[in-house]
Image (cartoon, rainbow, N blue to C red; front, side, top):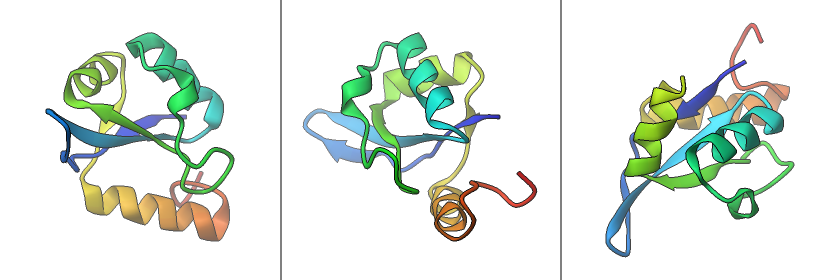
Length: 92
């Protein structure tokens, strides 16, 4: 089981934001608690597109807690795979 963070870096106010996804909702919420992101900010809960938008400082914290860095294309492929199979990656 893993948490993944992409390199999207979308501008939002004075921040850059990226996406954080996980194999399970529980893992995603656990990482949020570890890095200080309020769990109420979850995007598309209980859907294949479930994720958090996090700023770069939170990304650094998540990476230090074991999150895996991916690029935006990998993120999109993982979400599409979950839409088709219910799992982020082949073989899960």
